[in-house]
Amino acid sequence: MSKSTAATTRVRRHPWRTTAVIIGVLALVGGGSAAAYAMQLGQTWDQKTVKLANAFPAADVRPEAPAPTAAPAAQNILVLGSDTRGDGNTSIDGLEGQRSDTIMVVHIPADRQHITVMSIMRDSWVDIPGYGEAKINAALSYGGVPLAVQTIEGMIGARIDHVAVVDFAGFRGVADALGGVNVYNSIPFDSSKMPGHRFERGMQAMNGEEALAFVRERYAFDDGDFQRARNQQEFAKGVMSQVMNAAILTNPGRLGGLVSAIAPYLVVDSGFDAGYVGQLAVELRDVTPTDVSFFTAPTSGTGTSSDGQSIVNVDWDAFVAVKSAFQSDSAEQFAALIPPK
Image (cartoon, rainbow, N blue to C red; front, side, top):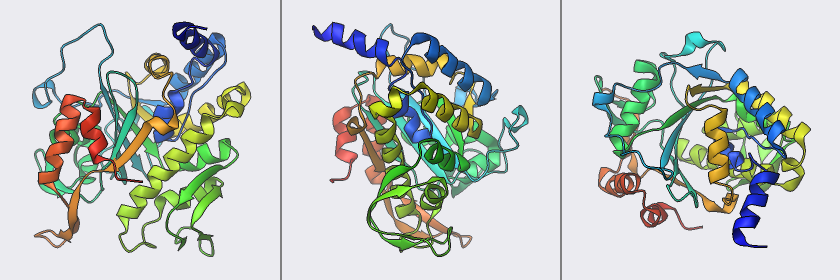
């Protein structure tokens, strides 16, 4: 069988296959074994996700948009996690008043050969347009999703193409819908979220309640939110590995239930629809969980702001390389940012 024929077969067999790669980071998946079923999953996605009517700042304060081309362009997806995403209707478009406890930028390169995910510490001390210096998670509270996007675009020097806001309950939902998730835990700890429960070191089989406690924990660690970010990355890896398993990909009932269970916990921009996700799935058909890399935006330790807040200092000298990687869509530059295993 030729390479092109093999690729065509993979697309036909699993037209939503690599939605799992993208949405593993968002704590949900898509998948399917036939075009009709993929369409049904797409309808569920579009009906149950809440759409943001206004997700982006004004064009004149954003990085210049790349010139349109026939070939796929690099994509940056901003993922914001919060303890609550609102009351479940379109009145939450602005999401002002909430703080984003999880911040990730998912970079999908133009060649569609891999994916890089950057976590940003929620207490990072940055310039928030119109408000001055503050913790980065305050941007969502001050000005909703558009201000959060503008703040992060200012950091990376490149456009955010799509946005997803994830209620933390979605982490619990995806684990339960999968029948549990195997997640690697690097540091043993007693949970402050589940009193009496201890997470041992090594691979852990987690149900929904355990997964939610795992990704939210920070008080048990000497470095607090730093380990919390690492644990959230490990959860995303566990979800992707499990969803890509043939037993999940070829089971329409489990996939449909998973999408149906997780979609209500998501708020996405209006362009982040079934058509967009499905197209990315085709373009990323050869990407596997081993092609997804995670790193944390460089910092230079913690400190105290002039008004007495405990903050994380961004290492702006090191961040020059991060900015260059996003602007140039450079796999080599991103690879240099990935910590050794």
